[in-house]
Image 1 (cartoon, protein in one colour):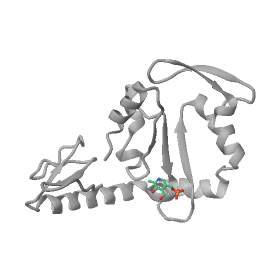
Image 2 (cartoon, protein in one colour):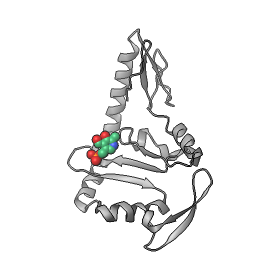
Image 3 (tube, rainbow, N blue to C red):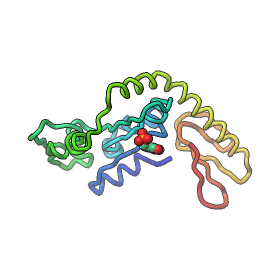
Length: 182
Ligand SMILES: Cc1ncc(COP(=O)(O)O)c(C=O)c1O
């Protein structure tokens, strides 16, 4: 599990922008945009709707979430905005995602796909619940192994022998390197 807040802070200090793909974490288990400090928030978040969100594999779709002025400006217009690190930045209409990516590539979600996504999201809770149960089960199996330590930066307090908790988990062997589990 990546330290998105730490990565965002380090990147923003250097004047870089951050894109987080939180498809696997889901918006529920990995709500990176809820972080209060703008320095620790990614500038863009991506979700593939194709995976957990729609859930049934019946459509291909996705979303990019960003600040209004990065997503769309009326043709010909520009605005001054403030970056996460407090620096002023001018955004032109042709730099916005709408004109620069969607309009040129024709990447718009059609209404049938949008319907599939909305319908699928109704059962997201079931998938998140199952995913959470699976993750705890896997963590318990790893935790029972004498050569594996489980540690977590999650906030819920479902402690196992090694102090594991959700939503964020990773397992590392005491001998060599790291193995990820989510
Ligand atoms: C983590 C992650 N993000 C995004 C995508 C892209 O998703 P899509 O299949 O909806 O284009 C994938 C596809 O495998 C993925 O694994």
